[in-house]
Length: 285
Image 1: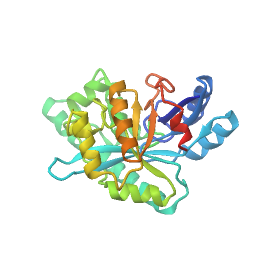
Image 2 (image 1 turned 90 degrees about the vertical axis):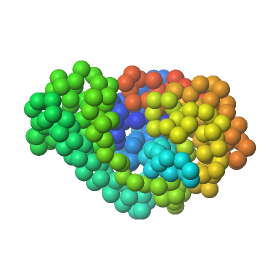
Image 3 (image 1 turned 180 degrees about the horizontal axis):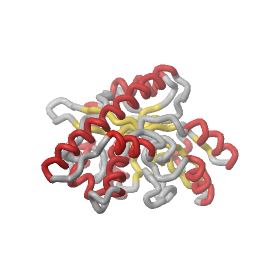
Image 4 (image 1 turned 90 degrees about the horizontal axis):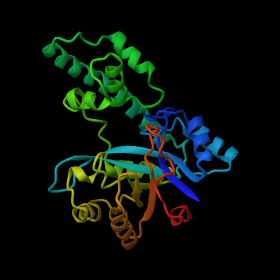
């Protein structure tokens, strides 16, 4: 059975395809066990669950939460955690996500103000409220920097999404909603789910690499600061090498944690189902 427990949609966050197309593509690729894990959003969950049942795909509810993480004697970092198997109608979880969505809107406006300050220095026409509205119209799910980057490409201010980030969006960033690991753990567990550390060694993503590039040191950060709050580790990921996956699997086994895996597919390009996740992952659920 092909397993993919880390997929994004345009329905809920920054994927390129709506949930209906993602599920149809998953069926074509013979994915038998799947989770949609949109950023800070449950918008795709109900439809994903219903469609998966129609298509004969085993489905587990999912979400990806961004955490503000500060271990002792280390700098504050941003990490992603995956929630699985929770009740999507849990009131506390829904309320918190509503607050986080409001913060995303505020953050987007603040980023645009900072981008405009850069434009002023460079003599580029400023972005207006009309531009903000047109960016918002491209957002199906959670509003984030990728939507602003896409708009800058569309306006021919930059040539690519990467250039948008390199030239403006890294420099002009505003902190995300300050959700802590204990808060996230309580939210997901009280909703009946489990919390899993996402892609701990992703060199190009939100990961422990920002604190240390050495997997042994990353393991020490996990065991020294996370064990009481997490239930698992995402060992298999599109940007994890086999030795990395083996290291985190061994760490998880040693501490009684679940092991998960997925492609982190945003359909840019479509890579869902391409990470070799062992069947033992599905058996845990």
